[in-house]
Length: 173
Image (cartoon, rainbow, N blue to C red; front, side, top):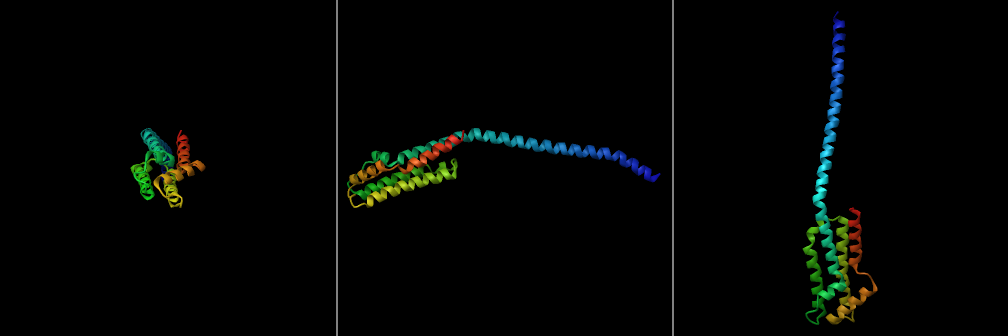
C-alpha cells in the first residue's frame, strides 16, 4: 500500500514538475528576448543622437586638414618679416593651434582616422621644417616659394588623410 501511494504521489508530481520546467524555460527565453529588444532600441536611439555628432567631428577634421594644406596655409598666413625662422614658427604655431582647437573631436572618430590625421599634421610640420633647412631658403618669401614648389611636385600630406575621412564617412551609410 505504501509503495502504491508513493507511485500515485509521483504520478501527480511529475506533470507539475514538467509544467514548471516548461514555464521556467519560456519565461527565461522571454526575458532574454526582451533584454535584447531593449538593448537594440537603446542602441538605435544612441545612433540617432550620436550620428550628427560623429558627422560634425568628421566635418571639423576635414576643415582642419583643408586649413593645414600647405598651399592654403601659405595664402592665409603672410610673413610678418623677412626672417624665415619667424615665418616657420608662425606656420607651425598656426597648425598646432588648429589641431589643439579640434582635439576633442577624437572622441567621435575612429582611432585609425585620428592617427592618420595626426600623422598628416606632423608630416606637414616636417615639410615646413625641411624646407626651412634648405640652403637656398634664406628669407620668408623664399620659404613660401620652396614649399609651394614642393606641393606642385607631390600631394599634400593632408590629402591622404582627407581621403581616409571621406572613405570612413561613406562606410557609415
